[in-house]
Amino acid sequence: MRSTFLWKSESATYSALITMALFISTLVILPANAGPNFSNGHKKIERALERAQNGNVDAIWTQHNGLVIAIEKDHFNAKNYAKSVCEFLLANGFAEGKTKIVIADKDVLTSQNQWSQLAERDCK
Image 1 (cartoon, rainbow, N blue to C red):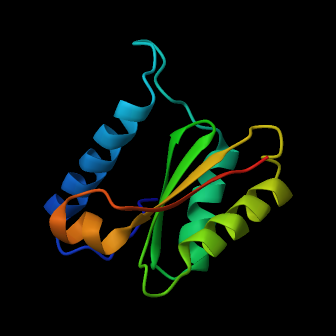
Image 2: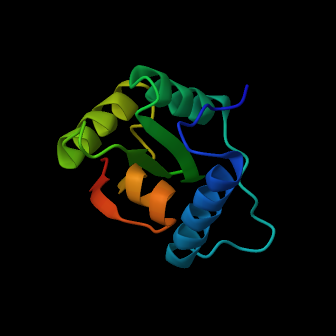
Image 3: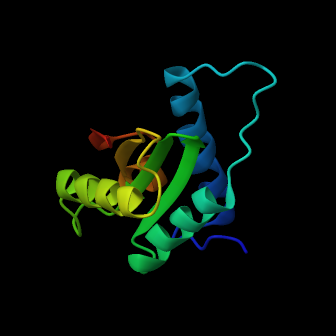
């Protein structure tokens, strides 16, 4: 099932995702043969976060312990949301992974095709 984005067009969606992926790839360099194969648990967390906020957020795992969430900053306090996502992850079996949460501004990402980080949190 494909995630629904509230973005202007499909090409804008692809552009925003490519920008996000390129930015994250500058943070973490993976070995050439280490393509991410995310578990069903990872995928369920992604969908649950998106559904819980009625399309106001888009979540994407960038690595097994790295989750980027694009939010509409007018609807959320980014630091509090990152904290609540960590609590949600810990409650759903991601306690051992020490997951890093990055919260980005969805509006800037989609309208200007640029990355604007609002908050970051290490879930331990």
